[in-house]
Amino acid sequence: MLQTFAILLIFQSIGEVISYALHLPVPGPVIGMILLFGWLVFDDRLLPVIQPTTGELLKHLSLLFVPAGVGIMVHARRIEGEWLPIAVALVLSTWLAIATAALVTRMLMRRAARAEGGKQP
Image (cartoon, rainbow, N blue to C red; front, side):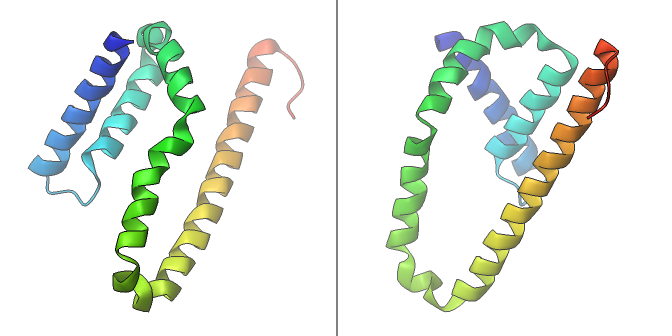
């Protein structure tokens, strides 16, 4: 478990350095998770190390959204006048995420079917 958290922290730190050094508007942890994903795509030796702990983290994922919800409530007055652009951005980004997930899932299912020699869905 400690090893998994160390790996996650290393990738988060690398993401923070990249975000800070390149003055990117993307948070460092997001860059770090993208880097970790890329690493796992090309070299899955870390997967058995991090999989048990990350599975447990995913079971409690909803708890990780509590600070964000509290932050929204604290700044409710501040964002009161911006509700329409925020709502539009949330709806559009949700639809975009669903469409992207569907396309990636379809691509991976076709790739798996080809690898097994079966029919494409």
